[in-house]
Length: 293
Ligand SMILES: Nc1ncnc2c1ncn2[C@@H]1O[C@H](COP(=O)(O)OP(=O)(O)O)[C@@H](O)[C@H]1O
Ligand SMILES: [Mg+2]
Image (cartoon, rainbow, N blue to C red; front, side, top):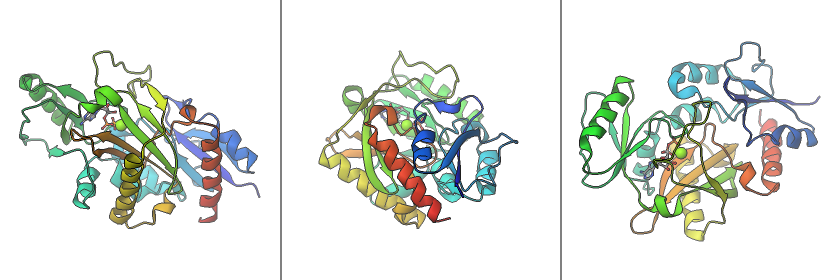
């Protein structure tokens, strides 16, 4: 019988932002029937699908508890609900740093607490967030505005993440290295997001991005492999069980790659920034994941 896969999206962007448009056809070529459905659509038969793949569920930050409950209700979800729970709160960066991974220095600031304010530029963002929404950059001389931003995050019940601003991002952006079925697939570069010209997309779910294809040097590829191994260790899973992963790296002041984000829930995978082979690898990995159900 033809396996049925549902690609989970959200009501505002029911077929993603266009990056995943080629996936249903790529899956169809391999004998897999694939369609889109917003995760909170009561008419969608997620329980009856052979596999549900989180692709564009970008509205979860405001409704994370409800979203995680839904994830747990889906019998066959990629990536699995426990991975999504861990990965949709940037506190996971602290777990990865504890494994010895080079991570952008991260302070977590819970409501009611105050951070050690840095004496150089820094970023404040919600620990549960996506698409750069709620992220802002401050200079060392703008503590008043930063305090206001922190109060705003806390008023919305967010734990805040405070990180030193990595100036290299202004020159070379961040590099996203995409893994499919635990194996490196392709990479792309994202320009700096916290600039004055940054604007929200019409959906309000993400800040418009500038992306380019990339061919990362060995130090970046090795750092991404280390991040994948560390995630496997923390999660207690074989990294090959992760249908997809995106490792976002920036270069620290000394040039060493630092982990900015590890995306295991619904990252854009940059299919439009790479050759057609990436979607074929993705479709093949879905076929392999179907065997494990
Ligand atoms: N510490 C940082 N240094 C430089 N730029 C940052 C830093 N933190 C965030 N940014 C910028 O803000 C964007 C959004 O932050 P990120 O941590 O990727 O959260 P998300 O993508 O989940 O909203 C990044 O793509 C990057 O351009
Ligand atoms: Mg990001």
